[in-house]
Image (cartoon, rainbow, N blue to C red; front, side, top):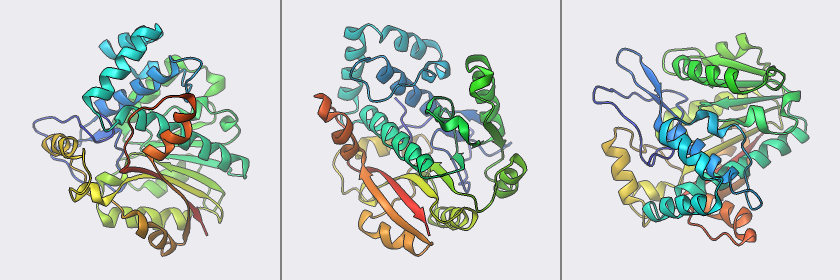
Length: 323
């Protein structure tokens, strides 16, 4: 199973380099400049599809998740509408990966959905999805079609996404979306955004999900400084990160995940110490507004429904406000 870096797809001849903005949901292969959509993107979409199929007690409703699935994944998502089968699939996943990548992904999705909608209610005039992968927020969040949404990804990955979207999403629900194909290693992302219609210093909500744990400290720093310099005061940066303790071997249950990721060629390379994050973002002209673990997000959304499912305490979701 492949879940946002907990187990990553690779190819034998891949030489992986660290881009400035690299999606944990898109596998970038450097060496001939090839790129292919990762299995991690499809697995996260599967988790959203399984959650959608739950019906009355779901916390994410993603009618587009299934369009990103192929083969057995599409079959499983279809069968999951039979409640007994859906619950059996979820139990299998949770037993196989007891630290909870499935519930973590579901709770994280719901939290980021709500943070995005709140930013739009506060007056954000544009949305940027960095490393958009198979993210479907641009098509399913209520009211998001009132503002331009910029989906940023590698050209090859984005070509697959565009094809799937054109085939499954009605034109009336995608006219606000601007695809921004850019090579995240060699391209000029700021220029690509401007060329797509992004307005500098406008109130903006930026979603940077499943990315930072693959970057260098320098790349994370450069990205945050660019975000702060390019958006208006009050804009929001919503991002995920891994607790550095997980990288240092101090968290139980991470070892087998990290070993698989490392063997697959995409080790986690960066994490924050949660206690240090407020000062870090403050030095980059931002204020930390929220910092929750996926476990805490699951307690917020799943537990009140009587759903006590494993979720990761070391995988975190944060929101920073631009000053």
